[in-house]
Length: 461
Image: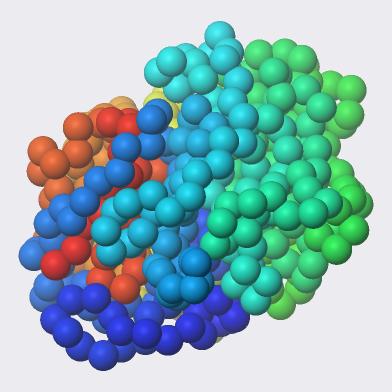
């Protein structure tokens, strides 16, 4: 389904060719979090090898966010293409795509913790904003536990905002992107290193009234745990409005208590419609990811989620309680690294995974994997390219123009592969000097990615 944000026209960058310019308006490009920009025509397998760094912008701290981008934002009477990026000291920036200079800046709060998942233990703006172009605003979670609505042109906080998602930001944090559908903005809560007390949850906010209208607690409101850790937050089926979440462990016995360590399908007002605990080996076996929604030709609508034990599970949407339609041990069962979020291409009909480790059987390797879908709607390994470190957290992939991109974690390289064959086409080499854990954004002939060198990097032809 096309979003209104994609209707803005302009000139594409590179080669001087006239083309439609589009936004990258939210995490994963769309409500389903598929990670594909189907409109990219400048960066292709034939041209991507010419990428070089155009500029970098100092964010002041590390980042795990995927950038979002808007074309033709009116700033002081002039039209500008802006990329929006946050970092873990609580800063959110609007940056001019052409020059790499700051247009505006807001600090939305941060927390100094004892959790060193982030190098200096300071957590701030982690999840991508969701852009509302019709009303020239964005929705984003701050490090102070509040959801903000900000003016795209100025960064000003709009009347009636922010809205509190948690009253205990010292223990509860939002890692995920805001997702918005039918006038409801959804935010998610997890913690810092599972330090109690905290109560994982999804919160639905009515945009018009600035009020929380529903809450889903995987572990219930009194048991700690059940965090929603995925960087994409929740995914949403645009046809039904149903909300999909993958949850973390409860800090009780069993750790799969209630709806923890589950894939859950919810109504738009967060009533449980279906859930499944797929049976996981070990303890602290979170789903540290966001489910993605996709539909291969000739198959029912699907949902896929990857657990940090390396298990990939797929379900039929609308029938999650029936259990997985497929279960694949993609990474090593003892990995416990962040395994990333798959991406799906409606162009190639392949599912892509940035894989953190070799599987126990050694059939699937660390690096980039692609799965086709057979006549029985089952995933089959189509190709794999072994690259990067084994047993290392990596970024989710993104797909555009017949190319799939991902960051290989602590090796600090952004890589590009032919989406059909898996041939490596490009690497950022030594340009980036910090780990890459946030998904890249590919739009209008440019690639944007944040890293643990504290910078947003922009690449183009």
